[in-house]
Length: 522
Ligand code: SF4
Image (cartoon, rainbow, N blue to C red; front, top):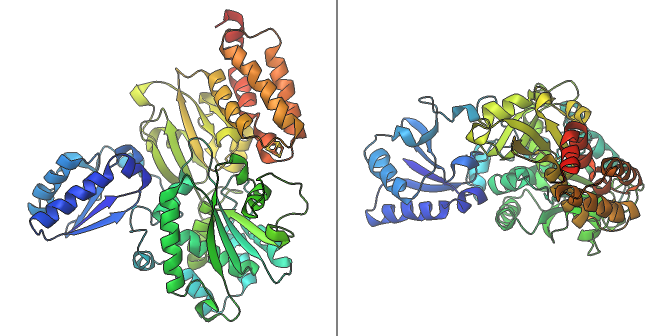
């Protein structure tokens, strides 16, 4: 019998370390015959701490486990072979009330999260890990063939931009240089987003293998993971995984016997600036400069880090790559819509019953994500809107809940897919407050380079603040709209270009709330 405790940040925050220690104490005190193991988050953050018991009958995952329940699990299930059905949140053996959380999910990027010990490379390998890399060597697959596979899969950048990954790799490959860089953007900073953190904590080798394959495809010999310092557990597990990858010959010289394929990867910790998620600012930060965006062209594929050709993808993008290379592009592009292929990971937060991480095929109706997987709205209140794409995104109101979530349909609403954070709001939420919250965030995070982003967002925030404080004036909404357009059009980087989105979408869909604040002076 194996007892596995979920020790992602979400589990630890809910008390999983205490639970793990309880199991350890019980095992050692009576020299009990079961294996105690660790994993990371399986996505059900709303039920943490989670504990899985695997025995001859299969698997059962218990939710909301505390030290007392740990004792019950040992006595009744592990020793008594009598599972405690009322604690079970997931099993193949019977239906649980939380089962709907998994219905409709397709786990590709998250395929190993919650199933393996992320600090044990053998567990990653046992589930097919590093098979894609080995396939490159054993089947003499050329870099061009790898790029074509990624193009055929339809994979688009999961950091928010949605640019075709294979095309990006092709541009980077086309630029000759003795030094090239492959960079992983793990500077996840959107309020409400934790997809990258969970992936890095739960399956760091998938991201590393994706980077190694990317390096082979573009001809890079150096890799950097730019990870925000606020993710200490992710950084710890990445460092362990990198050491293991070096020991097993997945990093180093002539990797997998491929002559001239040399690569090492190191981690650069970000210092907390949201703008460093922008490619050029991120590279400036790696170089030790202030993290400020610069003009493009030249694009990173031509002159990136240290003026050398570079390619940047985000965590989720890289995590998909080994699966696609190992299983072929059809294994991925059979999911999704015409222009948005594959799956997407979303972080569900806010006023939703099942807060956590889900992975669904592109094109899944928003309604299913909110009501089936997400379980609906807390306290059975009415759904009002969802903020998609963080502070760069926008809100999607209730009457659009039947859109299919893909790049095209989300963009058509005025929001953006972003990296996949979904902050759900109920009928009690003031949408002007929501717009103010997100603009306050981007205003503080503006690097100050462009006048409109620096000062325009400040003026917009002042107007929003006075509206929410009951001091709004006639004409304020029009001023907000005018300023928003100027900020969008006159900003150099994505931060400024998208900062007004929450304001514009809330005015578009909830103008009456702005008007009520101004009219009623409250
Ligand atoms: Fe900096 Fe804003 Fe200009 Fe981007 S748009 S470069 S964050 S001032």
